[in-house]
Length: 394
Image 1 (cartoon, rainbow, N blue to C red):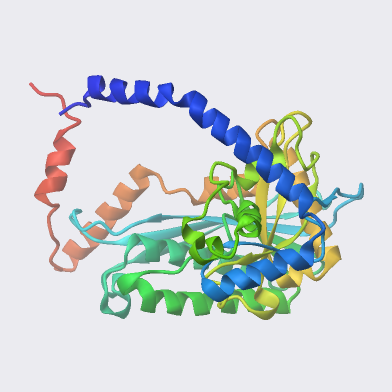
Image 2 (cartoon, one colour):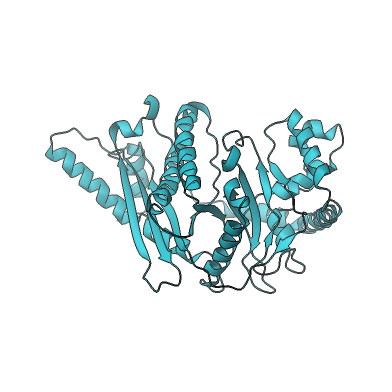
C-alpha cells in the first residue's frame, strides 16, 4: 500500500510545533558546551583524571582524551612545496543475497597514486575479490554484511600497504572513514578476531616502513570531545550512570569546532590531538594507538570540520603529522567549493560497483556453473514479487 500521507502530515505538523522548544534547548546546550570547552581548555591533568575515573566504572565509554595540547589549540600549515607520494584507497562491495538465484559476494578496491611535483599522471589500480561457496562461510557461519564491510576495510588498508612498498621518500596514505574497526556481535565475533589481527598486521607493516596513514571522516557525527565535556560535568552519582547522562546531547563536535559565526578553527587549521578512548582501544596498543584531530577544510565564512584519525606513530613524529595536515588541505582545495580529498574522490569512482556490473558478474557466474554441470538455484518468490512492483500492469 502507498504511504499514508494524511498520517505522515499530522506527524510532521507535530514535529514542526516543537521546533521552538528544540531550538531553545539546543542553543542552551551549545552555549554550555562552549563555556565548558573554554573553562577546561588548559586543565589537561584534570580531564585525563576524570576519564580514568569514568573508565573504572565503565571501560567501554567512548570519548576524547587530551594529550599535551590545550583543547582550544589550533595549528595552521606552513607555506612550502610539498614533496611526497600520495596513495588513496576506497572500496565497495556486493553483499551475499540469500534471495538471489546465486549467492556470491564481491569486494572491489580502487586506489590512486600521485607523485607530487613530478608532473607524472596519477596511476589507477583496481583489486577485485570474488567470494563464493566456502568463502561465504568463515568459521562455518554465513558471512554477514558487517563481516563483508570488515573484509573491505582490511582490503583497502592492504592495498595501501602493497602499493607503498619500494617507494622512496615520504609516502602519505589515506582511506575514507575511520581507521578504527568496530567490534562484531554474536556469531561474527570469531571472524572479527581473525580480521582484526590481519588488520593490525597491515598497520604494523606500514609503521615499520615509516608510512603515514590516516582515515578521513567527512561530516563526522561523533561527539568524542563533547562527551569528554559531559564526563567533566558529571558528579559522583552521575558518573556511575554515564550511559544515561547526556546533558549536551544536541551538540556535536562538528558544531563545536565549526560554528559558522565563530569557528574554533580557521580555514586550513587543525585542532589539538586527542586519543580515542573506546572499547576497542585494547586492540590498538603501542605505536598503533589511535588518535584524531579535527581539520577545517572549509573557507572563510563556510567552515567545514572533518575528523582525521591517525595512529600514534604519526602523532609522535611532528614532521609526518605536519605533512599529512598540508597534504589533506591541498587535496581538499582541489575539489573547489565542496572540499574533499581529490584522490579519495578518484578512488571512489574507481571502486564503485554499478548495478549493471553486478548483473553481469551474476550472469557470468551462472553460465560458468552451468557449463560445468554444477547445480544452481532460483531466486526466492519474495524477490520475484518485489521485481514485479516496478512493472507496468496491462
